[in-house]
Amino acid sequence: MQYINLKAIKPVFFMVIACIFCSGAYAQTQPAQPSAAAVIGVTTYIDKFFKTYEKDGTSRAIINIFKTNPLVDSTSLKGLIAKIDTTRSLIGLYIGKELIVQRKASNSLVLYSYLVKHQKQPVRFTFMFYKPKNDWLIYRLYFDDQVDNELEESAKISGKQQ
Image 1 (cartoon, rainbow, N blue to C red):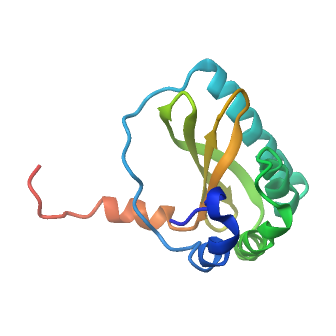
Image 2 (cartoon, rainbow, N blue to C red):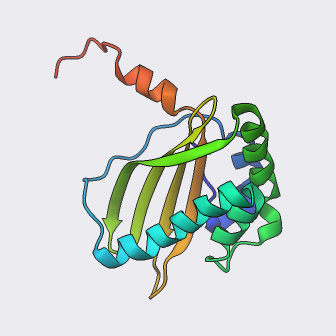
């Protein structure tokens, strides 16, 4: 799975877009519940994202969530928006979302991954938020259509003893 790295967004943006549908492994972190403030602040942004995604489309949703991070130029997000819109045109109307996993690296870095239901096929959106001082900002946004393949792979016998 690829991501938008805000520290070097312009040099790697096109590589990320080219590989956005590639599957990758998550780094494992200890499951932990974010503090109440993290849940409220971050989930508010995520809920707003999905309401806009449904009502006004991908472009508005992506641009609005990245307004939380002043380091991102909204015009540089056009490739990502185009990839998501292309996928949406193939998988039908948005139906809803379900939380897959929520992780906390610290009180300043959290991750929320969602199964996003469409008529024909699910996709996954994973949001990473960072709080450098007092306010949460979108740090990375992952998008892929491999969640069903990962689930299928997880059911295979690996031959390893546990």
